[in-house]
Image (cartoon, rainbow, N blue to C red; front, side, top):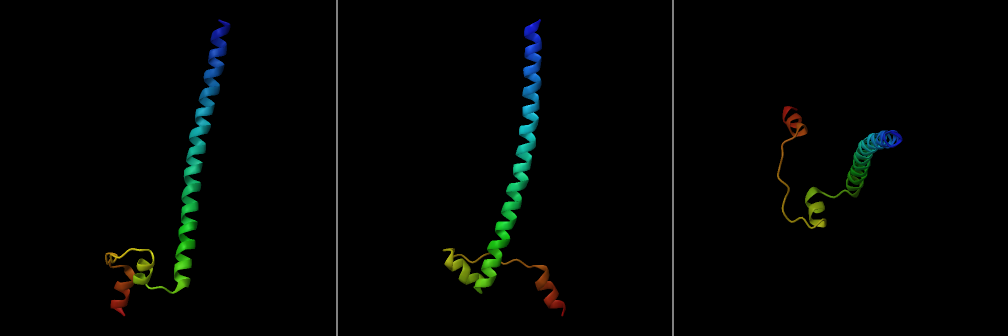
Length: 81
């Protein structure tokens, strides 16, 4: 019977650790997303400060194909003015 008490204690510790691991993985996922958002904002700011056009930027990055054109809200608002 002493062995069963030890086993139960170890199982409880194991389950607590599993719970902590899941919680920490979720926290790391959120932190990684925040880091990515901040890095993206920093990159966008640097690109805007450079004054390059989209075509110049793509050329600089070695992207020879032109990005597909998309219509956005700003274009729609320009047409309304």
